[in-house]
Image (cartoon, rainbow, N blue to C red):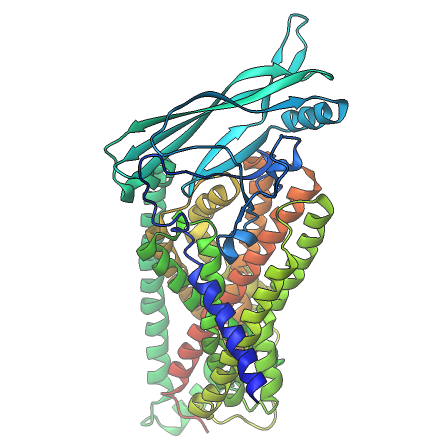
Length: 590
């Protein structure tokens, strides 16, 4: 027993260390320096500029560096998953001490090194450094025509680091390069650096503003898209309220009329059609109940997760820290697993499900294992290429520990609570023993067409925001307008609910009572249109190339669309459930 307690203590200590490292924004002590204090320049990664995920260790190129083991900097789980590996450059920099041109090392160029540098220059390789958690970027080299009008490969050998400070804090860093030297076998080139310090009036709290592209994200088209989506919400909710509620009110009046003579009643009964006729089947348990319960529970969790992460990003400016968003997402996913268990357990129990353990295990593992499957394939590709995008085995263990010791138990607890608190069947209408035959209807009233068309309007409401998000993730822009994202997310939820309710009403009027999966797929089809848009974006808006980047682009996008589809599907199903229960609550169920 004591050994078990110690094991759990070690696990929770590990998890606590992961969570505490999540912000990753104050690892350089307190960001305060005294005159002459050493300032570390960290080298990070290098890779083709057009392929953001294809990154390698900085020293995978034959840059000279000390033979001793340099220090590594670990900034949290999200940083590792983001493909960062910070290594001490061992370049001597001291606070407020200017450095004239100083030799880093002499690089002897043999045929292998020349070929590596030439390949890097041909593929527009860029590199990333960090100083006091502020990034610096530069290109490895350049190609310029010589006298014979042929492109010559030039290595940029001198780096000038310009550092601006306010008091005892570093505010801004910039890197410029010059002294291009031709790459010729047998030559020796000197790699040098210099450091210039300059004061500034910018405060420490505003030091990250220089990396934010305000004209791009706060362009008029972004504001217009929000306004356009908001008007769509008003129109759609008004349409649902005016048309559906008016129709239902008329149906109620005719259905509840008790004073007609026998002839009128017989005529009304003979003309009776639509959603009222299926009241004995509309609450029949859906097919594949365990799967539906799992995806609806997972979608409810993802909806709460997205809302929570956006709010934390607005409050805490998570875009500043390397990998902070990813770390926050993983930890919050684990902590919100109770929601998925609660929703799934209640839904499964209300529909008469008996194998609740199977439902609970599927709910807890469905989305993580789908992501793991995609991630495993991408990780294999990254390992084959020797890229920093490959996730170390230790990081995989940490992620598994978080899932096994936080997410899974909370999902189990949520399932038990959901079964006991919200698992009692309380349908407004009794389910008949014999299922009613479904009449054949027009093609546009079939579940497949309703499902496919249901995602168009929700996709239209987020279309512009998808462009900004894709551009941010794949084109080196820091996404910081989480207020916009919050508004777009709320608009997406409202539009999805309204569209799914309309689709469910059309389906029930067609006397088809299989509305559960239809309402889910009607909302989830939004993700299909997002994925189709991603194909267009890849071919038209980017210059990505190669198997590595293509697999990562479509793999990450597939992971995102799976989550979006499950989220929207759950929102649509839950909204339709409330609608169906509401309309059948006021009719006489025999």
